[in-house]
Length: 505
Image (cartoon, rainbow, N blue to C red; front, side, top):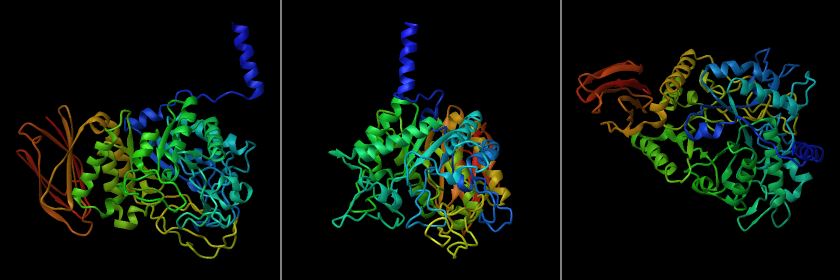
């Protein structure tokens, strides 16, 4: 029997007909238990060496790469992050491009690593460097999700037109205003395009061989549900813990092109995705009721499936304007504490935790040098740069850093209470002041915040039966004015202030 097993293994190895098997991946379980604390990073600028301080990597300076990215992993770990979402690491298109390096989401190959992300001084191949980076993450118990772009670069259309939808004149389709990419032809639920499916399976093969723990599917809504059913099943045959996160929102109502498929968030969850984005990015526009209603909506939605599902708190992503630009550092601090106390998975983007405003001095000006056919430093104002070789993300707001770390520590130290406790909305007399409690056993946290970023709110009463005569009150965050009475707390709020109180009976 041993000889036969050895012979079969030998045949599999020499023919290459074997599947990748991942050991010790726990990301899917972590995510479904709302214990993933995720940070999105762009390797191209994650640890870029901007020596001259002009915020662009030029004159022989070193851009971010897989090798120098390892230097920042201890920092990330110490901040409380346990999962990294790598924005696309695949090669990017250079034709009809946006920015001088090309958009990370203009994928030109599904089975290669972007050479821009490789350390040119290393003897390792780009794939070997990517694998080394992921191994170093795992040594620190940091899990890794890799981004799967939704559309192809124009360069890919020219070499592989069979992968793309074409109009009556056989021209490629530009979805929405995404002018640097073209719409892939995934087919529909009755007839999937196996050429596109096979390209995606090659992507899965590659990132599983690198040791990645999951996929974040960019604009997952524009592929049919059966496409995802097949791809997710394919990935999990090798690794049952392989996580799939859909970029999809309950507020998305239509596709970015009349030629595109549209699969809503709920059908994506039915197709096998573990979670989606929700609409937490709308906090900037919500009143208190809209905010707490959205939390209740997600709890009801996610509990309606026979299998566990979850969601990320997408308050801040690479597609969203920096909270600092919107409402100042106080908004970033509010988000950090909400992510510490709500029963979903925290998510942030690199630079959020130290107050980056993502406003670049050279933005949208003519570039002296370009690596694409775009000679302009194209960027989205207030958003993480994904188009150029730009500086390492980060601000210098120590108060934001301190609160991010403290909030993560609070969540870690109160894991069961935060992830399993009851969520109870509490009405206040002011439509801009939200309040809720989280309760498990004899422990309760009460969270309240002022969504008016211009006006203070005084003497707001929060009624709760948890404030009893013998209750122990600890103010975890915020101390402007808090007065406790029997079955209630009265608070004063500065503009945009959040208060977190822990109650023990």
